[in-house]
Image (cartoon, rainbow, N blue to C red; front, side):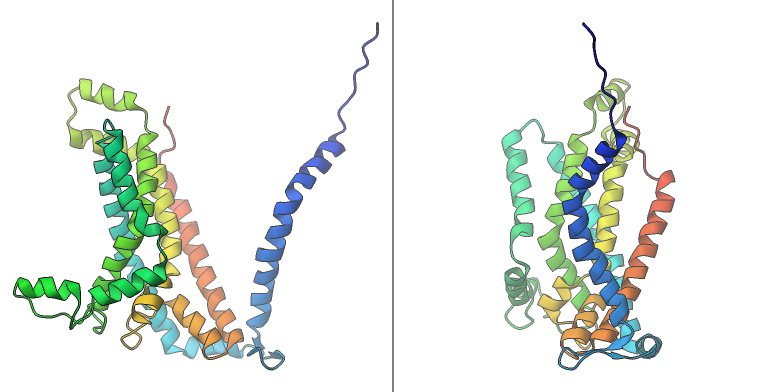
Length: 302
């Protein structure tokens, strides 16, 4: 009896691979590549939807260098990054460490996890309406309780200074649950053997956290940091829903300004140029973070 060996045709494997990749590649080309090309094209055009697009040379790009509001809103977005990213990461990590310490009581862990994560499931628009009432200067709930303590009323949404703490309160309540869940999942993935060995050696709770938990959690911390930086520098919901960018331009982010340039001023070509600058800034920040992550992130869990 003879055994016939069939040789695999590498071309068939390649064809099968491309066939499986085709749906994803088609979506990528249609919804990422083509829109990106269109944005580059529009950045050199004068276009307002109503009239056909006209070649505008480099006027949109020259306008960027002269637009003080563009630089101002870019600075506002940087402020949001400096304020929101550390706050969300610190609070999310503290909450995750606290809930993870209760892991023996599964019902309690489930309850806390539900309470902290639930606000992220709610519509931002409805939550913003509720918080705008809480932060109202004259009849807001927060100023009412501050008044009971003898404090003066604070114009949370009408002051160029207090609008940032107000946005921080709203953002913390609404979004910290998502980052808390990332950290909690990362903590639950750490091998208990490391902590048990350290406890046998007499390590304190702080020493275990400092020398074992945080280094092993560093990949999760890095992931949360990257996603938070990218998301926060493009912040839109909070200033749009809560303050409308006010008072004046005090809380107007770059994403909100791009939106208004396109859909309020009908300057789609100029808005396209602005969005490309924002994309380049995000790319540079992300590349720097990945370049410097080698000394800060440990992927060795063995």
